[in-house]
Image (cartoon, rainbow, N blue to C red):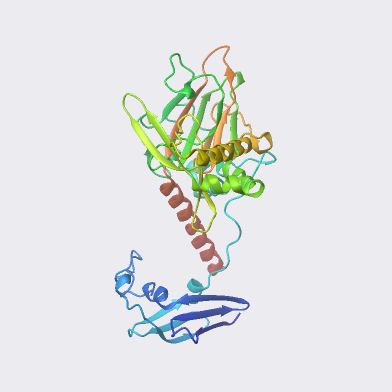
Length: 376
């Protein structure tokens, strides 16, 4: 398909139009200039910028533009010349939404095999893509040792350490210092909203489970936010605009942070949910504002606890859940022990190392596929 480029008249030569078929994209001259793919502008090895973008002339303009079907050649009013692969300026549209919102009707849970993900890049990539799409993945075949998860954690990056150390025990004990250590059920929640930054991914490894109860509960916070936005837009607006606080204090730690229960990006898309009844401490806002907030929080709670939005898998020994702590609300049903102990091990892994591994594997798979196609 032919590619057409032109400097748009009437914009003081500061905009470029790129057309392929019925697709059109416009680019600002400064945006193009600071991304010029040459060794004077970008370091060839690191891709990092060598010029000071803020020092470019504010009235920088395009003085020439041409395309031969493979590259777009541009000249700028400061005398610089640049040659862009045209695909860099007009990439193919995305294949589809990365996030798939789900409810209790989800027929097949995303899953992975521990040994395969540990040994094969394609299996690890599939696990991480499922985690990104659904917000959780269940991993089977995890060794029944205290640090059984660690070889797979180390395939992604370092374990996040907290005031509880690295991997912490989650089991019922006498004189529990945290409600997770009791046999009571736990309402849907996200972990550690009192930290900054909040841990990105929860790794929950089962060594032994209760003989009665102790099922995990999983709710897609993005789906709950989507339903709230549709059914009660005033409540949704309140929870995105009201910043609440979270606090955890013991003999050795004093942790506080704040943010809205539903957080949006600049485009208005939901990027994070926070919910932790045990540690939330809403400030003493004006009564009218609190009245609205309490009603909105109640509406959101009704959604995240609704059976039609909740999955209830029960982890068996050697199974593990990896959960997106910015999206997934998790909890458990109450349980009873006639013998033994319900023992799970929990750790955190940060978002940047997880995303980096996923995107690197995706890029490497693309390069490998391209090489196969070229050699065929």
